[in-house]
Every structure is written in structure tokens, then in C-alpha cells.
Length: 73
Image 1 (cartoon, rainbow, N blue to C red):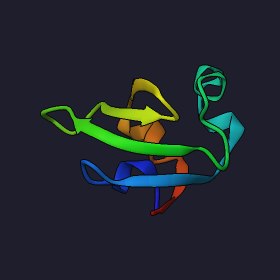
Image 2: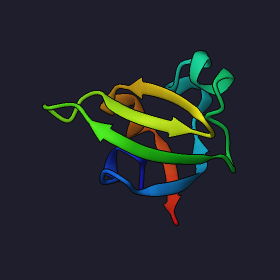
Image 3: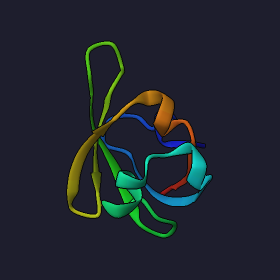
Image 4: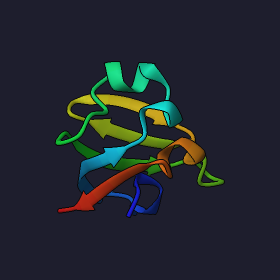
């Protein structure tokens, strides 16, 4: 399961990702293994996704979100 598979309100823990596939800025903002992520809202066309990642709110493209594996809680 990846972040792009989450439904509004779902919470998950980041389990893995390939460093080369996601921007360094996401890692700096807390996108690391073991951190929590919550899907706050989808844009009208489901891209981008608005996330709460350990208290930091950010929007990421669905393409990038599909590269980050999570475990739903």
C-alpha cells in the first residue's frame, strides 16, 4: 500500500521508499520511515494530495505519493 492508496482521513506509518524517487525536500520535512502520515484532503482531480506528516502539512503529487509505501493504522 502507498500514500496514493489512502482515503481521506486515513492514517498510516511510512514503511519504505526509494530515496532517488522522492524529492529531498520531502525527506527534510519528515517523510522518513516510522513517521506518521494522514491524508487530509484530495484535490478535485485527486492530484495533488494534501497530507499531515508528523504535524507538517504539505501537498504532494500523486505520482510521488505512489512511491512511498505505508502501513495503514
